[in-house]
Image (cartoon, rainbow, N blue to C red; front, side, top):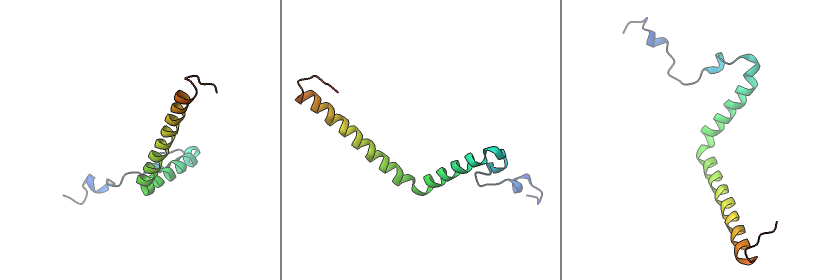
Length: 78
């Protein structure tokens, strides 16, 4: 390849949207970047914690339903 090949000037790293985001939207963009950084750093742990919380909420809902069904003669009064 020659020294002036167009491929030489192409970035291989993703990102670089800072140049495209208008100034008024930069605070929002910075917040988005922080969230993405958090997801890259703690993604697996974060998903695991959310799965555990979801399982606990679903189990509590099922226990509440079972309590209402079996112990209140099938009538629910909230």
